[in-house]
Image (cartoon, rainbow, N blue to C red; front, side, top):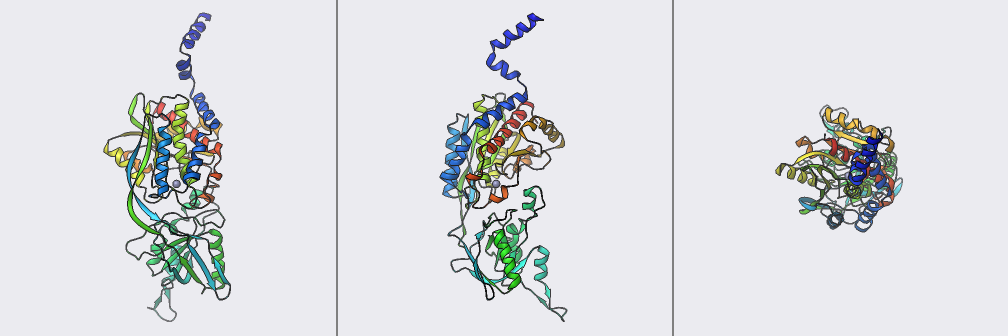
Length: 470
Ligand SMILES: [Zn+2]
């Protein structure tokens, strides 16, 4: 017995570097990953640079180009096996000078409203638009106001929408525990409301910001025109001023709203996804992708959406390098461009995977902010989901408990066509929509430890996927 113990001791001491490391259990490796992440300030500094030196990064803007150059440089300096730019053609929408809106009432006076143009909207032009406002809270209400029956007549129908500005005032449901569900339930009019209203002859729309937050900043986002109807200007109003407008309309339904926006869509331009990778030791032509999106809205600094996801993805590779972990499969960090407007970065990544017949083992996205991670959403077969969930107990010490949500992420979702298992980092969502798509989305809202817990969670999951497969 003594002899045996002595032999094992000698054996291990001969290979102290590799042998002892390889024999450590998964929980010990995961602890190393979290320890290294929590001690490091590197990715927090990188995020600060992205937010403070580059700032908001609308797709196709000079800031987006600077973010491509910056993240390329960061990954290039890490000693990765390869770093490259992947061509993407992206749309270009420019906001123009700060937007203005005010309401004028013969009863209540006048008041400036806190608004912003919605992404992809046409502008009102320099002179702006003036009109009476008609408020609706649902599609049904919009439809009924366009088809008001005139009393005493069977055929005569009046349209109260025509020539007006429609005010879509559907509030996010505060009772939802996931603020993403609350957002999902309220964002429809921002996206499609302009065409819904144009169908009935409206000349513009003003939409309550899609957020559970209660402040006076407007939250932008993207929209889409239905080609069958006139394109009309669309703006978002802060939730505080949506409530104020609602109040004023109930006192004076004849008040006049003025809106001035000078945004426009320019010609498409060239941009890039930025990709860095560590080559797999055994299966170098099989890939695990981790990514976030590099573009952001322009009102803030694109910190939580999605500077954190992009920088966390780079951090996953840095953790591998720092701990000298040698993956069996190739691990890629991808900074996707143009998530916010046309998702052309995600499409290009998928098109390349298809073209070069790449085998993708799994893809993980972080695009829900850099708050304390609580788990992962999963989009995979039951068998694969069960395997992922079987690892979840390893993450209880780090606060991860939620593996019940479905989905991956907007950029990686295209890979689903190749049957790639998808995961999405799920952080605490309670503060995210205070920042989302608004001037509040700044570096100061990001906590270094929360950011790093997200990076470590993704790196640890990738470690398990790489070791055991899916
Ligand atoms: Zn995002």
